[in-house]
Image 1 (tube, rainbow, N blue to C red):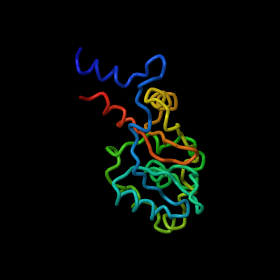
Image 2: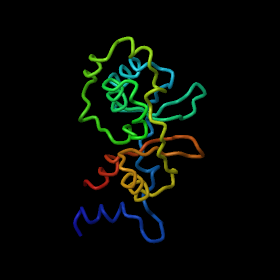
Image 3: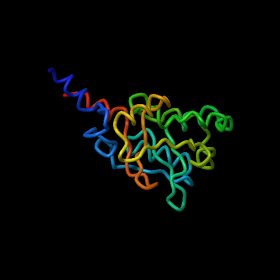
Image 4: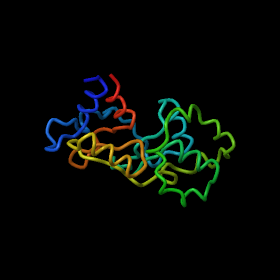
Length: 174
């Protein structure tokens, strides 16, 4: 049996659901979160300084209220008030760091707009999450059925991690 076949079998959910890898086994637990009250300028600095493309958004009570990504920032920079129509497109879940090495496109936005507009104004309120016990196959199905690249992992309504498509792909490499 080749390594590839063995790897595929190891990540596949068996018929009884036993011994399958779960979301908790492959998730990243280091989550950096944005605050819904931050300005877009603060968010852009946060994303660039941490080398990330998006983050969960918390309100003042630390409740998860949405997600925000460089896609949301770019959409704001290019469309301004028309952004609200696009909020359902969940960019946080679909963009990757490869296509967003900097936020140079913000230079075209007015500085005042970047300081006045908040994360809450541009975030995506959709939250895709699975339980810590969800199998890797269930996580993958959630990603495929929603056309997304990231899924939050929750334990008793608290977000404890995130699984990306890259996390799942790493399982297929020896």
